[in-house]
Every structure is written in structure tokens, then in C-alpha cells.
Image (cartoon, rainbow, N blue to C red; front, side, top):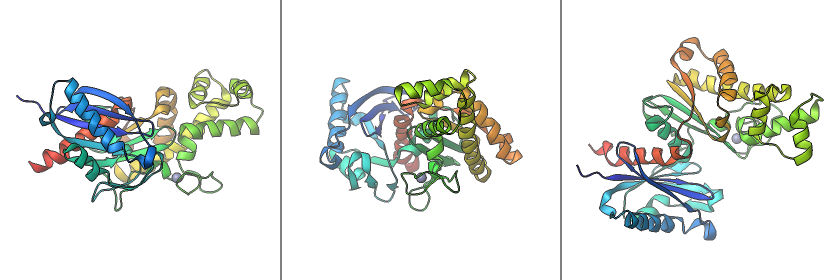
Length: 326
Ligand code: ZN
């Protein structure tokens, strides 16, 4: 049978990941181009279009091979016309991504929020495989989230659904968050948040810790170092991880109580800690979860890594451009 491909595009502040994926979700070819943020990011659609053409050429294919493009963008997306109100790290303001990219590529384009799309990727081919009710939380520099209920992304009334990172964890006296609130989950459970909590703990106690020497010497720490120390039995590091997983477990439990999901997938750089994160998280999560909800759910570390975005975007393109028309 003549096989057609989907194009998945994952837009980041420094690189744009692009992939050709077949309709079974198998990766055919993936590559990256640098994100050109000059002139308010106006070159981005042209760069993507040219790169797709060039890669088709290299593979000895032409555009008839492609069904359409799914693209994940940072920040809330206007689902009516596929435009982005603001994406600070790309330079975009009221940017008509869908229509511009369609014009440049002459292919149909589906736009969604990047964290939502990563959740879809995990649902299709990753740790959430087969689950139609799924929560996905990405612990990186910030905390992203995606909620899938009955196989559909929860967008909400104006595109801000799934913003798990901005669930309030610290009711009073929390630190300022990029969103304008204080005490968001992102301020305590992101890589940045974990480092901040560790430094606070180091300066407010005299608990001996290997992290104290490392911090004195380099004036910086990473969440990876904190998890490593915790694994080696470091008391201070374990206290911080216990606090982080308490906030994360509470937030996820409350979400789960409302949604009764089958899987909760934890992704992003911080999730590379594996069991050092998952074991204490499960304990706190179970404590706060309605028993019947707890019975039905499985917590797992994401398995697709950096490919979750392009795979999820391809699924969206497949769903919107093929399945919904059948
Ligand atoms: Zn926030």
C-alpha cells in the first residue's frame, strides 16, 4: 500500500524538532533546525517549510507523500484560528501560526499547546500507551501539563486547560511565579524549584550535607545533584525530595480525584531521577487519593523523552486530518 507520512513539529526556544512519522506512529526520519527568533520570530514558518522541502528532496520524496502538519507551540493556543497570543521566547505576539505555515507549505496545519501534545505522544506510543484517560506532567525548567479525558485533550473555555504547573501548592508566602501568581506547583516542583528549596534548606539549617560543600564551591546546584545525594542517603537532600513529592503528590491526587485517570505520566528532565522521584511520589499521592481512584491509576515515568512532542503532533494531524473526516 502507498504509505503517506505525517509531519510532527515541536517548537522550542533554541531548536525546532521536525519528524516524518507514518500513520502507525513509527518514526521515519527526524531532524532539528535552529530557532531563528530574529525579527520577532517572523522567519520561523519559512524556515520550517524550507527544511521540510529540503529533507523530502534528500529522501527522494515529494510533497504528495505528506498528509499534513501537527505543530506544538509554547503557551495557550487560540483554537479557532490556530494563532498564538504571546510566546515570549519566540518573539511572537498575536502570531497567526496556522495560516502562515499553511501558506508556506501548502499543507494543512493543526496547532496545539506543546505540553498538551507531549501528553498525546505518551498516550499514543509512550508510557500512557492505550490509556484514554491520562494526566501528563512535565517537570523541566518549569512545570507543564496535559490532561486527556476520553481520548480528547482538555483545552477548556479559552485554551488554558491542563495548566497543572499553576495549581497552587503554597497558599500563603509562596514565591512569585512567571504567571503572576505566587506559590504555584511550578515554583516548588520544577528543576528550578527543587534547587531553590535546597538552597533555602542549606541556608536555614546546619544539617550536614554533601550539597553544602558543592554549593560553597560552585555557587550553583542542579536537581540531578539533589536526587543523587538523596539516593546516597543524604538527609538534607531527602528532606527536600520529600517536600517536593509532597506538593506534587497532593496536586496530582486532587486532579486524579476529579478525573479518575488510568495513567499519570511524569516527564521532563527531572523525571530522569526515576525511582528516586517515583517512590516517594507514590506514597504521598496514595495518601491524598480517593481509594477507588487510587485503585484504577498507575503512575509511570515518561518513555518518549524528546520525541513525545513530534509524535503527539503527528497523532493530532492524523486525528484531525484523517479520522475526523472518515
Ligand atoms: Zn504560576
